[in-house]
Amino acid sequence: MAVIPGLKISGLLFSIGASAMALGAFYPFFCNHNEIEMPRQEFYVWGSVSEAARKAIEIRYKLIAYIYTAVYYQTQTGKPVLNPLFYLYPEDENTFAIDLQFSYGDAILVSPVTTENATSVEACLPKDIFYDYYTGAKILGKGQNVRINNVPLTHIPLHIRGGTVVPMRFRSANTTTELREQPLNILIAPGLHGDASGSLYLDDGESLEQECATEINFDYNNGK
Image (cartoon, rainbow, N blue to C red):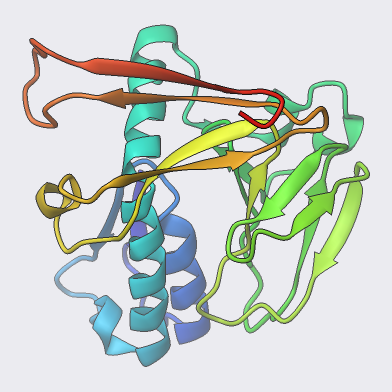
């Protein structure tokens, strides 16, 4: 759960607020909340924070099907939605002490900026293929830290792990009801051997007891 940017904050800096906003959108439960006697901290109070909110929420909404699927599997198998890097790369000792990066589901590596006014962040990329979420650029991880430069205040670095398939909505929307009317895209991120896999779980989005649900498994091999 993420209460963004936090409770009982009397002197919130807009730079930290923007970073907290961007990061909070990649937690399973995410809301803007404060106590009555504290200064106002709605997203629209600062221009940079509102811009960060728009960008992060747009990404979150596009990924709702992916997130919903990850949450479903957590209820069925106990597999966490949020994972430390060592969970996915237990053989890589360089990941053991990392506490500022995490994997959102199996596919999305989140490397948040956590330092005030910083425009770069040091991120660990294990020995694997990664793809920049925003540009699609392929990066070969070497099991060491890399510095990501020129990070705008309203931006959060995201990478797709090679070997995964990510279902995502074609466009964002103002509500999740409207979002369900958007077509689904399937993002394929081939791994080191050119293959990829993923899942999609769909139900009516409302009922506690589902009478009809669909579970789809994706496998990509040899270009198809």
